[in-house]
Each structure stands twice: as C-alpha cells, then as structure tokens.
Image (cartoon, rainbow, N blue to C red):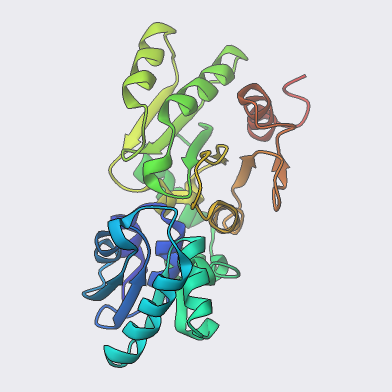
Length: 287
C-alpha cells in the first residue's frame, strides 16, 4: 500500500491526493484524468504505474465528450486498472459519463467521509495527549504557546502574505501566536516585507514538513477564502481538510460557507482575524 504519512509528507495538504493514498497501492495501475501536471501529482504520492488522460493542451476549460471517450478507451484498452483518479470537477464528470462506478474512481469523488480514516492512519484511532505533545515538540512549541496553521486545498494555493497579515492583526490585538505554513505557498516575499515592516514579534515558521502532518499540535487552523479560479474542487477539498483538523480537536476558522462551524461573518480578512482571535483566546476576546 501507499504509506499515507509518506504520501502526506510528499504532497502536503493536497486533500484529493490524501484521499487517493487511502485507497491505492503503490503498484496499482491507475488512470489519472485531468489537466497538465496530473502525472507529477500522482508520482508525488508514490504511485508508479500511472496512465494519463488529459485534454488537448492540458488547459481548462475543456470539452467533456472527447475526454469521456478517452477515459472509456483507456479503461477498456489498457487492461485492468485499480482506479481512475479524478482531480477536477470536469474530470469527475468525464469518469461518470464514461460509465465508471463510484468504486472505480477516487480523488475528488471520494473525499466525502475520508477524513476519519485519514486521521486514524496518520495519528492512530485512540489519540491521546501524547500525540499532541509529540507534534508540539516537533514544532518547537512551549506548553502554553498558542499556535495556528494555514491550510489550503492544495499547497500551491497557500497565501502566505495574507496569513502574515492575519497573524499580525492578532498581535495588534495583544495576542502573540506562532504561525505555521508550508513552504510551497505564494506571496512569500510580500509576507517577509510585512513581517519586517511592522515588525511582528510573533514566531512565523515556514515548514519543509507539511503542517497537515502535525495537525494535533495546533490550537487552530485557518482556511482562507478559496481562489477565484474555475476548475478547483474547493468545496469538497475544504470540507475534507476541516473535518481532518476537527477530528483531532483543532478548531478551523474559515469563511461563511457550508460545513463551517467556526465561521467568520464574512470572507473579509478582518472578520476572519476577529474569529481567529475568539477561537484562540475565547469567545468575546475580539469585542
């Protein structure tokens, strides 16, 4: 089998990738359906036998019918495959139109209900304070030091500058938190300029090791508004990451969207910072 901790270490907070790693073996033959980069994304999970079905040119939007025919042909002509991997809404539609059953596809189509299984494989079914202490030691945190991490549907969609701004707002409110994010995000130069200009006293750490692998060690996680870009399976991926964090006792601050339990009043950065402050310091702290 694909070792889930290893897959998470390589792929970061790639929600659909984690779902794939739950159900696929390293030697399984898989057909990956999606735009350019899908082969590299599959390889990052440790999958070795990968065939790809991509629209001509690899871009979006792309016409459903030709891709559906290609999926059907690949499934019929390339021999028995463990699964078709669909990482975008269009790819999932193509798999459905090709007649593949839910058992034959993964990725975006298999995120619902996957969070408890992923948490059990990553941190064990009976999680105790020992798991939290071990994660906090790896993060270099003191016993009472509040810590917040940034999550996104995919690591390359982490907005580091926005996260620096949010944690800076908390510091202005008198709360110094340790902020953690993966190195694969965007806006790093802007984030560094902000930290230098303010200057911020908080500890702000970019991790080589994905923060999603150390979720039990945080007090809160922040899911910033999804990027305004078509073709991103934001809703199901965001729910998966939120459920994964909540399953280990970490409260998740996000915008006013489906499945949000610690929702801000709007997607505005000040509203999200205010809600984050209440989660870290207790209700009423932002008033």
